[in-house]
Length: 487
Image (cartoon, rainbow, N blue to C red; front, side, top):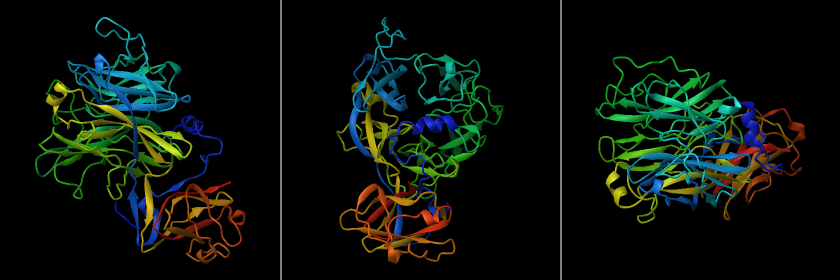
């Protein structure tokens, strides 16, 4: 199927939250690069929406009276889930608030005693007042700066400023901006082991033939989060907030995501929520909100799509189906939805957290009359973002060569009730491997994240260990999410 288009300790921290029986250390072959499927007939790559579950946070504090705002972060931190979310009070004053949970469903807003609000420190505020950051646990940083929050500061000599903290609760600001451009959307950062630098995803802007300005996403690779970037605005830099405030990003950093001719007119990308995939950081996943504008810039609805990548620069959008959608009218999320960065791994499930709003973007008047914003938990199966789908009429596919690095082939697959799947092995030249051909394969009928492939001679592939093979697939009414070689 042809289409056009972490630091080691961090990886270990991610993997350590999994059950010991999980195949976390196996190389996982997902269908996130469309070119991985070299031959196909009557199959398609399909984005599978996350399942929206419980509402876990509602606005019930005075400092949340106007709304729980767009962006949040949830970290699985030592087995406890920790959430930082944005809220605004009746006077539209923003604050970053904190909540935590043992089970991911029931959350408490602890009284931290850090910030005074209306004469009392009896609240869950952490002393940050900027809206556009992501909390990141930086294993490369000193202990007193273990947590960082890079955010947009609209002020003279402002830009993207790093705050740091030893515990994620008590924060200090760096003296100088990290990036002397403004990016008024949720910035995302992580250590990218592939390039040996920090990846920083920021909002960019570009002017197109219709003269409108469109939001994009750019990426800056930084050797340090404490040394300011040398790139500076100049006399031609675009300044959307006035000449005394930071310039916005145009072509200063590489553009990695934008709408194109396949998208509806007057739509653009609002966020990216990108990250290495915790079960196999060779892959990158993102959950961007896309904005369908009803005027030149401010008003419109948003939904969440899924994007995947091998390198964090070239992102694939597959069939562009929604990954998380606004709810029905009256649900409280009919206007727009956003997905926060970071994934929580629990057994065969991935948990994510996102926000929903009854109002549309730019509708500040509605929120003055009724508090807006709720936070949901979403559930996805492990590796379940994109599937290779075999339809009712049947289909076939052959992958690029992969190295056999385990004695059994395990599939993450759902054949439903009326479907089935068969799996054969080919050599790199495309010839069937004796004893492991499609003709030798047992028919799979199951819904499992670890379905072991069997042939007439059994499931043992030890004789093939270290060899490159192609996976040949023949299926009906089935979805294949990934495969890996299991012990």
